[in-house]
Length: 194
Image 1 (cartoon, helix red, strand yellow):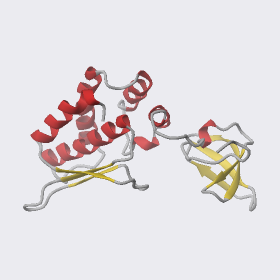
Image 2 (cartoon, rainbow, N blue to C red):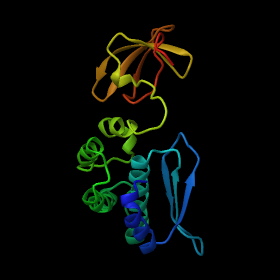
Image 3 (spheres, helix red, strand yellow):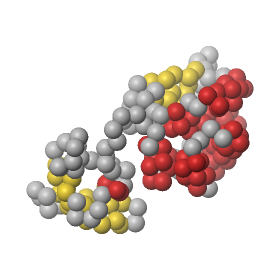
Image 4 (cartoon, rainbow, N blue to C red):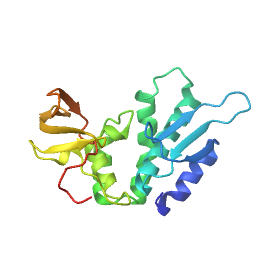
């Protein structure tokens, strides 16, 4: 995580002790909160392969779950108004620390107006965060022009058609079937250097 946020995060964990685990990459989730039972502490896990800014946001997302649980237990929705308030309250001090690059800060401020269950669904925030990922970035469907042919999951070929609300309409070339893609789906464009 950004070094300027370390003291703040350590103080948060000291206020509400939990078992924090940094895991290997999980494709299904970036982080997780599990309430404790009996003598077992509350548990938070965060993927260790995230860039420093995504790691911090994910960790604060999970700490917001912990704080919401401590206050309401399971009497509120996991990503309801109480969690949204807790998440915002945890992130406001981080903005004051000035640890985020301007593009991430701007996208995060917009996202916080109504945070969703997963920051992965916010296209602007994810595009800003992925600029700080290590290694070469795969193209995403959102950045392709209409009529571009691409390969998804290493085998199936599609043609990008057009945007439909928040998804991208694409045609599978071998079957002619239409699929709606997440704008953030990583793809391979034949002919590009890889």
